Length: 134
Image (cartoon, rainbow, N blue to C red):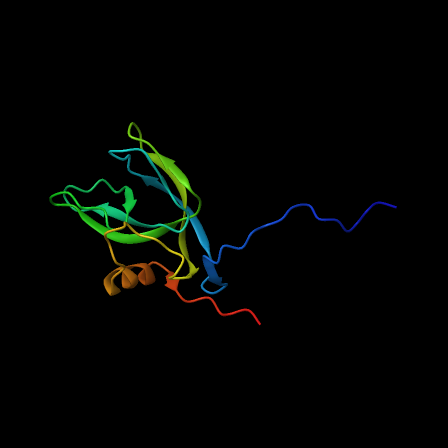
């Protein structure tokens, strides 16, 4: 008889997603090329570039905006992503879901503001601490 019960793979829980409601939704986004190549980590909050100088591309929330550019909190990066200096990168992003505020990141000199949280909430992204395990 075939072995009907065996482990196929494993998953490590990183605590980024904290609840099933609102439902996690994933979409695609274009991350703007960087001045210096870097790895953007899973759980990084990304902002959409708009305004008269905006290009409708994503950057790490807290990046300094250009003149006549507005950067608004928009989504959360699904997986670590290498972003270079020569081309924009298409990436999977969370466009909705419930996430642990202690596990998300923004640019090092930026603090997530209430306005940032409101912008995320308007897009279906809720920040909530993970419940302790029993």
